[in-house]
Image (cartoon, rainbow over the protein chains, first blue to last red):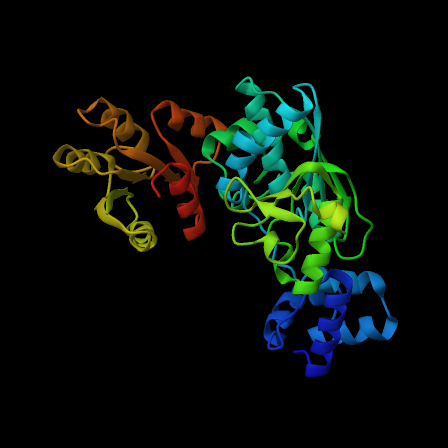
Length: 275
Length: 121
């Protein structure tokens, strides 16, 4: 069990390293989340994990500690309405503006174990099969190297492939490997995975579409505004940002306005000049 | 309220599935094998059928083929729920008229996700 002092230490590191604002009464939560990492590191308690990391000023382990506080989104096609808005409105509009042969750049920011970017790859292939072909590069990033390794392997348990995937999408896009299921090579090759920290790393881009769903929810208002404005700078002027269904970018910054229903935001043309 | 017929020879599985589906606002009927299920469907077609594969008397896939021949038998949404997890078995079930397919073991989240994929919720 962590002491209050150790909890405060973790909270400060989480805020500084990844923008995560922990609740003051979150000690039990942190303790539960850190336990698997403590065990992997050969520590007998979570307190020992935190103390030894602090004593050695171990940057890599601090990153692993704060990364393990994030509860990843592990469903395929998370938030069906956002995917529908992408395929039926956002992408067709971008192609109208850019011409049908344009190559779209898509960024899945906070991709966890890869379900979201692979869902985009599946969606794009389905659009192609419907005669609405669109060329795109998909970049997927996360701050957790553990989750990125898993994502890049394209391997999922039987439990995981039954969350958000219809049986048709499963047998069309995955193959069985022992007890696991692996996404087919052509889809795996369609996504590039890289480490990236939305809080501290230089902005990437520009992208035509950024998905950053339920990632900024743990940030406090100032950090959330700053992160959203960095995302705005990573977005083409007519690009779209997809947030989680309950998230509202226009609440904290002038950079975006809502469009196409829940979770979809477009950049405000005026914002860049004002900034 | 939608109705769901749970067809499984295991009372434990029927009970677990019933509890999850009642929470999702389904009214539940149960059958212990395919033949019993077919008799119940002839009386009244449910909106959904959660269907095991290996059962005594009549298997899930034999029941499904028979059901789809019945008058009104094309209407129920059929979701397999079985330990069979070979791609060839899954394809066989879809060919026989299954709408969705759950590989056991399952939990409430998977059941809910699959019923959503099948358009039941």
